[in-house]
Length: 133
Image (tube, rainbow, N blue to C red; front, side, top):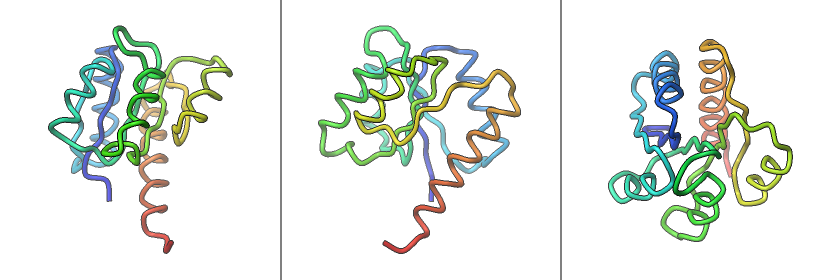
């Protein structure tokens, strides 16, 4: 079950859209937001999310730097991370998967598409948790 999500994204508009789309999908999921990788690690001292959505292009600590660092910390290295970014750079998409991201999704333009993406990711995550090992 997903109880909490950490969104790591520096764009206030994208934060707002993601928050509202998540409310459409499941109001019971707690959303924490960090505006870059440095703030994300501060948030992780307080909350351990079930899932992280991570932007690539951010100041101070970008998504690739964050992903590299979090995968080296035993406490956090098993948290599923979905890279959620405007980047269409194929090399970045390959790199983040190599670094341990579960998926790399391009941010959509339409709100409805954001709802669909969040619904699909959460549904897939829930399905994987319900399957026997």
